Length: 198
Image: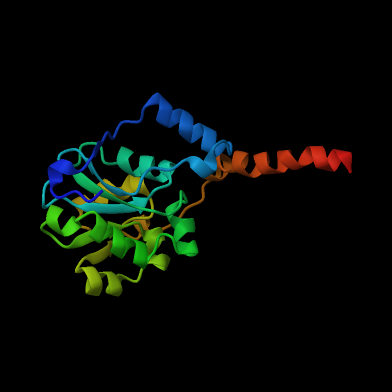
C-alpha cells in the first residue's frame, strides 16, 4: 500500500490501551515474542502536515509503542521499517534496520509526495545499520540521528533536531536490567525438564 496523499496514511493513537500493556508484559516474559510486530509502512500521530517530522522506527511492536507514546501532543509521521519484528538496536546489527530497507520504504510509502522537507529522523541505535550518504544520494532524504531513548524525542525536536550529550548516552540502570530478567529466565526454564530427565 503506497499512500498517494496524507489523508490516506493510517492514524495511530499515542495512548496505550490495556491490550498494549498486556502485550508488552507478555513479550517481557517471552510469550508471543516472535509475532509481536506491526505492518511496516507510514503512520501518522496527531495531525501532521507536509512540514511535520518523520521518525523512523522498527516494526517490533514494543519499540513502535514506545515511540508513539512519546508523540503525545506532537504531530508527526512514523516510518516503520520491516525489521522482521526485531528492535532497532538488534535489527541494525542484523542488517534489517538498514540502508536498503530505508531506501525502499521511503519509495513504497511515497514519502516525497507526503512531506515537503527531505529529512528522516532515525534513532541513534540504528546508526550502525544505515549508510546515511546513500539514503541522501539515492532518495534525496537527509538522515538525522536522534536520541537513544524515545523519551527524549520531544526535547530533541524542540531543540531544533539537536541532541545533547545526555541524549546520546546509553544507560543500563538496575531497573532496566531487572526488566530483562524474565526474558533471560523463561528460556532457561524450558530446559529444566530435559535437565531433570538427564
